[in-house]
Structure formats: C-alpha cells, structure tokens
Image 1: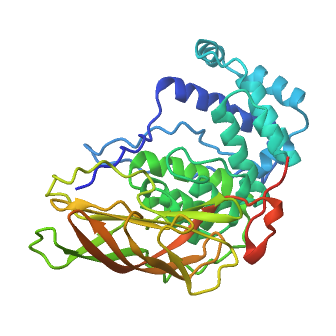
Image 2: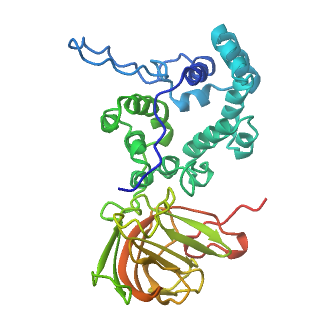
Image 3: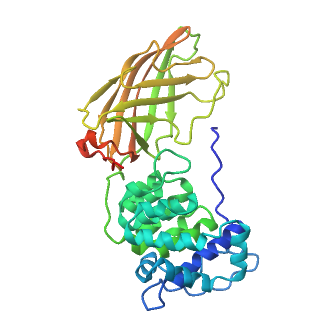
Length: 399
C-alpha cells in the first residue's frame, strides 16, 4: 500500500468560520434584494428520526446570492467597503483584528472590482495569498479563461477544479482530487442534487453552496474534450536478466495517471513526467513487499510528428524502474531504446498515449522494459511568444 498525504479536512475552525461569516456579508452588503438575484432558499427539511446524526453546520448563509448578482450590484470599492463595515458584527470585527486581517473588507471589495474589470493584476494586489488565489479563481470562472486559475497547492499546474469550471468542460473534473470531484461536476451541472455524490456531509454542504453561488457564472454552454471513453493507465513489463531474479517477467501497473498530466514549459518544448502528481515516496530496494514501480519523462515540441520517437538520453527522455529486491535503474545511463508517442497534442483535455521499449542497466545485469501508457493533458504552461502557437500551444503574455 502506498502512502498518500492526508487531504485537508473540510470542516472549518472557529477563526475560519468567523472569516467565512465576514465574507458572506458581501452578498448582503454588495448585492441587491431585488427579485431574481439569488437562488431561493430550499424548504425546511422534515424532522429526522431520533438518533440520526445532525447535518453539519454550513459556514455559508442560508440564502447564497449568486456571484453574478453580486458583481452586477457592485458600484465601487468605497461603497462596498462602507456597506460591509456597516453590517459587520462587532464579534467578527474583533476576530479579524485578533487574526491580524484588518484588511479583509478591503480585499473583498477590491477583489470584486478586479473581477468586474477582468484584471488579474487587481487580484495580485490583494494583501494575502489566499485572497489573491480566491480572486484569480473567481476571475477565471467568470471570464472563462483557465490560464487565469491559480497554481494548485499540491500538484503541478493550476487548480483542476478551477480549470474545469473556467473551460466549461465537465470531463476536466477528472483532474480533481477525489474529495473535489462532486462539487466540480455539480457546479457545471447546475444541480444541487449532484452534490449527493460528495464523499462527506461537510463536502456536500460546501458543494450545495457553491452551486448556488457559481452555477450561473459558468453559464449553460459546455465544451466536450472527449475524455469519456479514455481510461488512463500505465502498464509495463520488466524482464530482468543476470540479477538473480526468480521471475522472468514482472508486471508493473500504476494508477498515477488518472488525474492527467501537466505539461511544463522547457524552452519551446514541453516536459512531461509520468509519475505520481503528489510526488514519489522513497522506496528502498530492500523493501521487497513493495510493488515494482516505474516513472517516465520526456520532452516534446508542439509540432512533433506522430508517431514521435524520443530516444533515451535525448531531450530528457528517461525511464526509471524500481524492482524491489533486485535493484533500481538510473533511467538514462547505460540505457537504450525509446518512448514513442502515438497521440500528442498540447491542449487541455487532449489525450496523451504512447509506448515504451527500452533496455536498461540493472547492476549487475540488465532489464528490458516494454508497455504502454494512456492519460490526458490536465494543464499546460504557456510557451514564450517566440515559440509561436504551433499545434494550438498556449503562448505566454510577455510582461
């Protein structure tokens, strides 16, 4: 069993709830009470049977005003600040002072102005990193520009949920963590019922609130990236020779490609690493109870002709294999063979497929490794303007 970092809990601490309450005042202070500006509050739930656990308390208000309504009602930062401060309970103001976040109200209103103006620079000017990330997330969602999404805190590339929302592509929710999959799809479906698939009661409550808040901002048009029939996989066969192996073939199957891959800019090419997006855990060769693992890496230009053969040691192409009890390959030193791409397009949601056929040094012998892999592009970095936009590659905005 491989270890994984424990995902953050979805419940909020008292300070976080106080901040959430202050942020919720935005809907009341910066929004209107005109008909049609908010989603109607659901009917009260019927009495529950004795002994039934109480549902989690939501940090969101009962009447969640749609983000589109909040933005329509926004007039100015000064007016927004005045209304927010006038409606802030003294307990929340006191808590914000205790937390050293006296600029919360200013950040809330400045973020609304930045989103209204379509200004990522306005988001970057906020006082704390979490506020900047939230502003960029909502700006990307409203503008439909995935490139504006903030970087993810745990895996390479931008936040997968933000990318899917901004791209209006439900299939890209496959890139989200398991805990975020339901809310990712529910907002794009515009359905609170879809939140029933959330993995915890707390996640369901958050999901329902986000549907009310964000569903209207993503509109009704959807993009289909065609990933529904794609099954990510990495299946390789290792055949060691001269290392005292009792097995003539060792099967290597990894589920690390299920969330897609990030294409990192490397000059005018993209570097791709087929490995655990959360990072590979150290695994000493002596741990014979651990399964065999493999990681692949290569660089490819947007205009690569298919099938594209990438030879080991050229352009960063490497294959590393760990065979517990036998040894670990270096990846490029003393190796021969190639990674061949059969499907390649630097575009979010595009399929990435290829095959592997290499002969690697495994002291004191060698190991032949062959097989194939299938995944998709979760996100990609922009390339410099000088590289052009060949094959749909995303170009960077020069400062």
